[in-house]
Length: 191
Image (cartoon, rainbow, N blue to C red):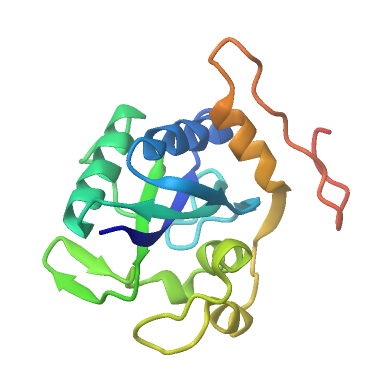
């Protein structure tokens, strides 16, 4: 049976967009029909003294059980260089979070769905609203759009459109990666 899933992607070490694109490539083997949000830059939320993060969310379908999907996300993180001993909420090459798995609510020692902190994180809710705004959070009964509207965007800034992450994920390693693009509000970026 296929399940609709939502996954958060983040990186704040190295070539952040490339790390996230590699994560997306890794997901494609087990999650079909991937649809990505814009990429946002965010200030670190829990541990301030570290580089800014890039964040995005994607949705897709999978045949993997929730525990199998979580295990796959951990393998992709390790392949990107993430170490298990890394400090919680600290810098990381790649962070993949299982945010939602259909309408399931799971509370196991190593698996919590919906993600327990997603409703307090603008870097999750605002990108997720782009690709799954009508999805109803199985615990609150509110849509992702309504949940996003309840919190401030805080230090969230548009970094690149959805195509930037998708194109970077599709590009072979020899092709230069997408540069940071200006956002339409502030005009900042490399261009």
